[in-house]
Image (cartoon, rainbow, N blue to C red; front, side, top):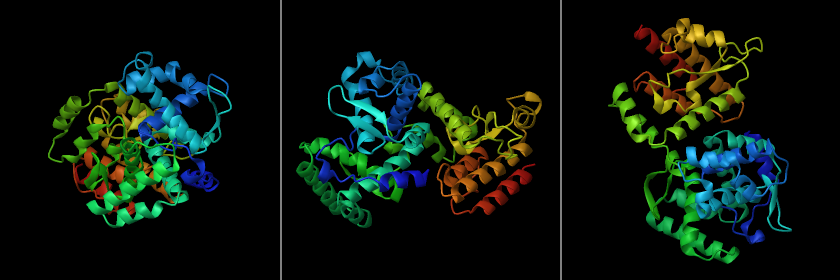
Amino acid sequence: MSKVLNDHFNGLDLDIRKKNIGTFMDQKVTPDVVSGVAECVLEYLSKNEEPFTINDIRYFDYSNQLVKEVFNKPDVQKAENEYDKFFSQPIKMFAYAGILEEDLTKRPYKYSVANNAILEYVGMRERNAVTFLQEYLEKLISDSGIKKLFDDFFISQNRAGYERLKTRFIDFIIENTPKNDPVDISRIFTKIINPLAYKEKKFGTRRGRISQTVISLDELYYNRPNWRDINKDKSLTREEAKALFEDVVDNKNFFRYQVSKAKNFVRKLQPYSEIHRFEQYPGLQAHHIFMESEFPQIADLPENIIILTPNQHYFRAHPNNKTSVIDEKYQAICLISKLDSIEINNRSGESDYSLEDFINVLNVGFETDHFNTGMDYEEVKHQIMNHVYANA
């Protein structure tokens, strides 16, 4: 998909100075909202013809269910003003980015899909939306002639450099777009700098000031999934982590949505069993290598989900179809096979999986800190086998 993104953006001119419109980015344009809105558009178009309007998506039943159950917000009909921005801002951004075509000849404005592959990619999961936004924003600031301002800040990570970048960005937007409110532009600035800072592993912005630590993934989201913070405390036992997870996850629908989305994502990547990669072994079951019930904090990571045949799932991964039991030797086979899937994907130039996230899965699932991000694929495999047989 990285080549598809590159090819798409290489064919566009996103220069803000030439367009004189302010819809290139906005406050609700966060990875999880962008992914959710893309999903709503795709679901709408699976049942309706193009073109569509923003209100078509906004009042679509699937959209209403998404904002209520996943984003834990009021019914769309009861929160008109709030959800106007929730749907309109990502759709406008998609149009600016060339993913949607926008017909402005008469109201209501109408939209049709210009790049279905990228829209599907973004709708698959939030991490894809992160990658999309990073590619988009890099192209946006480069075409607009302000990339050096951001580059200078990422080199000189101090308060003076931050204030200089923010001030010049605000002045640039006021000069080249209809936007003229510095407070509003500052909020947009946050949505631009932090995805780029996360990619660069640099300081960004928090509460209108330079951050004191590097920007984390969770900070990019509208609906911040704070249960992942549980993974950071290595002193917690498995039972303590599970209990804390129950305390911090106040939106169980969002959690289930994340898990379901992760399973669907892996299914699309892996049509065959990841143990036997041949069409004679169709991949029909999405299996948590470390069980969701035991390790909910890593249940939504694709790196913890492997595609198996029904027999592999119900008679090998779970002996005698006892889904509350894991065969630890077969679990090791699943981990090695999943690592192969990650390596194949990454070496092909894609970034659908993260080796870093897989290492996190191992440390959480094995309740250890023996795995670290400096390991290569072979060393990770070696350590998996060492751990399994040392504890046999």
